[in-house]
Image (cartoon, rainbow, N blue to C red; front, side, top):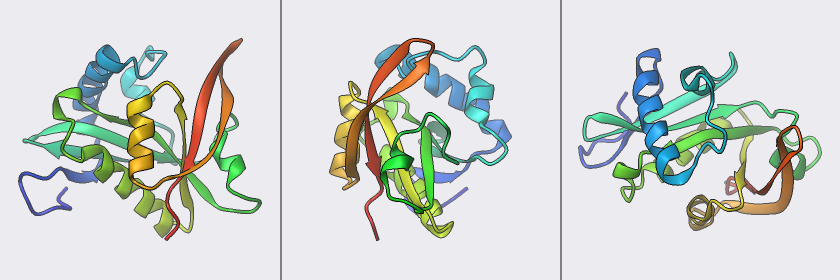
Amino acid sequence: MRETNSASEPQVGPRGDDDIGACVAALAAVHAKDGYPINWPSDPGRWLAGGPDAAAWVAQWGGRVVGHVMLVRPGADDVAPTLVGAGAEVAVVSRLFVDPAARGHRIGAALLDRAAREAERMGARAVLDVVATDTAAVALYERLGWEFLASAQQEWGPGELVDVRCYAAPPE
């Protein structure tokens, strides 16, 4: 799993089954600091594994897994895919996080870039919904040139509406 040459840069590569434990540990640190995910999954390893069509990558930095991103097909509750345009092929960025102890090293940017490049390779545009109160994530997407599509509400459970901001990867 080597896509960068410098040991000081994050190394992004496909997530393997043996990475799940380290991803869960990083996710727990993110949840403790930032409250993501809002609803902690009963089986976080399974939640991170995704479905059979999911593609996932991890970032390693300093010899350990410090970040994760997944690309999935649009789901019924995803808002961003409905905003891109009729007939447009999209892939949804999901389960993106960076361990708080490893932030500030462009790890989130590297993971987003990898997911967007894979979507493009598949003939799709990467899109995502982010909780509107996650101002650090919103700032990251905007700093990287992701296109703001709209604000909306998304149902995350019975009677549980969450305000989200919808983005699409910058067009090539």
